[in-house]
Amino acid sequence: MNPKILPALLRALAAIGLLAIAGLASARAAEPCRVVVTERGSGWPVSLVELRTTHNVSFYTDNAGVIALDAPEIMGVEDWFYVNSPGYEMPADGFGYRGVRLRPEPGRTLKVEVVRTSLARRIGRLTGAGLFAESQKTGAEPGWREAGVWGCDSLQSAIHGDRLFWLWGDTTLAHYPLGVFDSCCATTPLKPFASFEPPLRPAFDYFRDKDGRPRGVAKMAGSGPTWLSGMVDLPDQSGQPHLVASYAKIKGPLEAYERGLCVWNEAAARFDHLKTLWTKTDASPRAPVLPDGHAAHWTDEAGHHWVLFGNPLPNLRCPATFEALQDPAQWQRLTPSPAIPRIGDGAPVKPHSGSIAWNGWRKRWVTVFMESRGKPSVFGEIWYAEAPAPEGPWAGAVKVLSHANHTFYNPRLHPELTPSDSPILLFEGTYTSEFADHAPPTPRYDYNQILYRIDLDDPAFQAALAGKH
Image 1 (cartoon, rainbow, N blue to C red):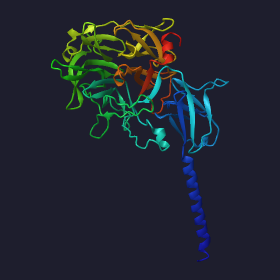
Image 2: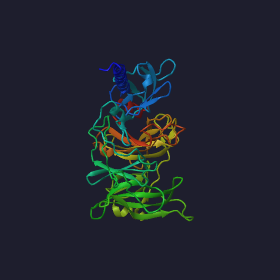
Image 3: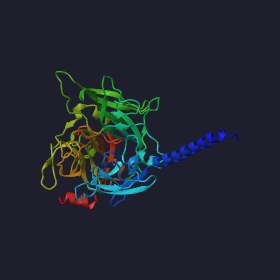
Image 4: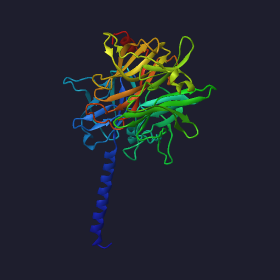
């Protein structure tokens, strides 16, 4: 070998070795530390738990209760993490701080246990991207597939045929800040979940456009978004079922200028205009009471079958037929109570939004609703109450979920998901930083639907109903 070449060759080999070592070190440093957050007692994974460092780097658990800690500056260091989560907490230390010390190491698994403080138990996020993103960073959940929805507002649901229809309002997509503004829709089997325990794995079959993106299904004529409400399955005189809903055409800021009815077109997989019920004019500046909110079926003592509409308590009923829904002369106005007395001191709790359902286990009508201007969250305090009949009297309000400074609105009960005699009561709602006091949006969770569960036979819940909680 030419002696003049040898030094250069040795330098090159040394450089290659250093690069290889650096590459190995970099790969090792990039491997995250896996943290699993569970509920004390049940061992269930808990989603929507924030771990925040003392220099304000935040991480959030996914539907499997997993966080992938990947910040290089915290590796190998004993770190304090503040722990925050609606309905769950860590015990306070002597200074009042609620958190945990962890020493993250690449590839290591650490466990954190939180205490549930709410009567409602979080099952997981239903919509949005990255339901298992943190788990996937650690190599888990390789088969999970994204639906293409990043955020969506306020659910309507109804059984139609052999499918459960899920319909949401304004929907955020990935390709542009403006997404779907004429109602996004998906279907599932009638029993979409194998169990009502986390981790939650929703598998929605979205109606999509030619590019494969979730699309709107209610493109009513006129400018502005189309919002649907009061979605319900009703038979016509021949027994043929129709999926119908009320619609509102919206202009800014959040102002309806037209209201009416629409019906599902099976062939085109969309809602078509059925009937205009009100148009805003100088002579008619406000819409009358129309089918709105959430629908509930009810057969009275005389055997008459009604469909009730309200948000949360019924303010209108009509015979449960397709023809009657189109005939305002057959509608009957109801006057819901403006407030529900609280368990214990009887203080009034003013409902803002929510839904009702018959509960076979309690043998009562039940409601889960958001309080109007509650505390500590103005639009994030969720209550439960009961009544012997859908018109009331409603009483015994018990708070089941609270938010410090986030919004959780339009809660929707899901009686169709559980057996009729089950003590499990499921509801979902929209979690967002909107309408809160400068709350930062929670990554992936903001403006999405979260599913909760109340165990009506839980001793803590029974004690709350008895005024002892």
